[in-house]
Image 1 (cartoon, helix red, strand yellow):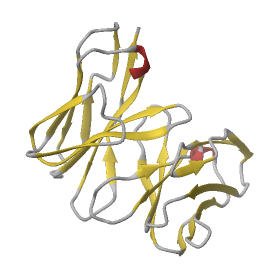
Image 2 (cartoon, each protein chain N blue to C red):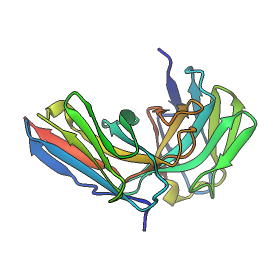
Image 3 (tube, rainbow over the protein chains, first blue to last red):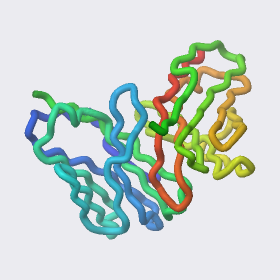
Image 4 (cartoon, each protein chain N blue to C red):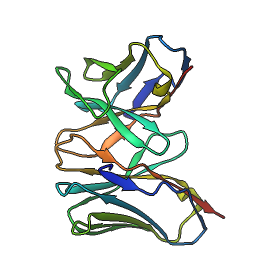
Length: 112
Length: 112
């Protein structure tokens, strides 16, 4: 069993829809949770960063962490065609710049 | 702009050949990482380096070696390439005591 599981999709939604992307994990020592966005033919870039449980909002994006269930989510409101990308969750036990464990990535397509 | 660059961007090679992928950064970060990305498997860490004299194996280091020639340069070598090393390879950089990693544009490697 992989430490981090993510539904690979692909996920296709109409413009304006609310998108929910999810990851589950097995390592209870993970404390730092990230979402990276990767456009086609590009490297991933950090989108959201959270510590421990709770919610964090940034514009149309909300990251949610439930450590008791070992489950994290990324919500995208009013999705736009420019949100079409692969979204990867990533986790770490500490913030010392060491190893990140990535999910498989979910490919999202937002249709106009 | 401070950046992470990778050369070559695309490479086709034959089984048994030695190949080197190069990464350079102008971000001034101490930490550098090599990942491979495969469909359905996400990003997996090959090697990482916290400074010029500190190199560590990642999750899937077998068949690979690295060299940290300077703070700004980190090379990945495949001593004898095999077809299952066909993948997208990413270099990334990061700061100490921080989890955000900054990725290069990737190298698409095909081993025939």
